[in-house]
Image 1 (cartoon, helix red, strand yellow):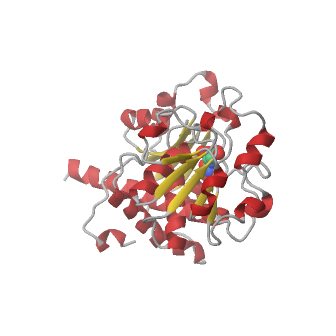
Image 2: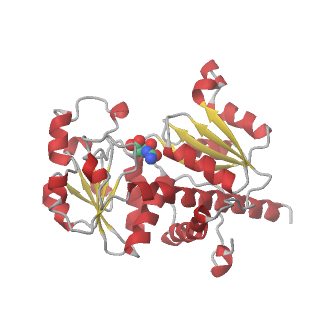
Length: 323
Ligand code: NCD
């Protein structure tokens, strides 16, 4: 990888905790680095030595299919040793704290901790408590930076740039870390974001976000270049925030009929897992406008880039402290 020599920019963050504090330049740098890794998937030998001798631990306190497997594969393609930690089979069930768990893993020589946790801020806490690099793989309702990076990457890959694009994020915004990280990434890259959903699924203080809000998908769908459909986070819903699932689907579901009103080249996105027939009709999820599986493929390149960059920052930090 010689991405870093193409520009005078030097990546210096050894943690990726969220996108709120990243500059446009930093976000673009990650996307450019990922482009270099994209061709890996097409090689017959899919290995690079960048993380040889390094240990990555996947600490997942919540369920995951795409994110976990994609981090595992990304780390192994960079030749790291990977430890898979799951809450259900660990001593967390015996009362061990997050920090104690992480410190014990660190004592085994872990260099990078990838963490998913149901408490917002857990990765931040960890980054202040251990020396290893920390990557946020989703914390509560807060952020999911690698998901938003792969979303931005997919849009850029197909549309060329995000500048001036109108991007709708539809559904359960209030409980979505994907929405929050997307808002930061997409607006920094020059897109206009329109949040669409019932008022009860909009976040508090939505007026302070750099976005427009619509309670009607039908009113905005013809304006959108990209539509990102979110899952209703039933596991996080506190009460009855909409009258019925059927009614939600009727007003906010992306159906074949509704898609007819959209621009013919609209990109249909979804972070997964899909609830087919609820927020998205199967024919749409598998249809010609859908880039849902491309998002998953691109996730690998993004996660390779993030692992590569945080490790590089840690190496530079170590050199600076022991010149
Ligand atoms: C999302 C998550 O877990 O935040 N999924 C993912 O990482 N691809 C979205 C969701 O669970 O709905």
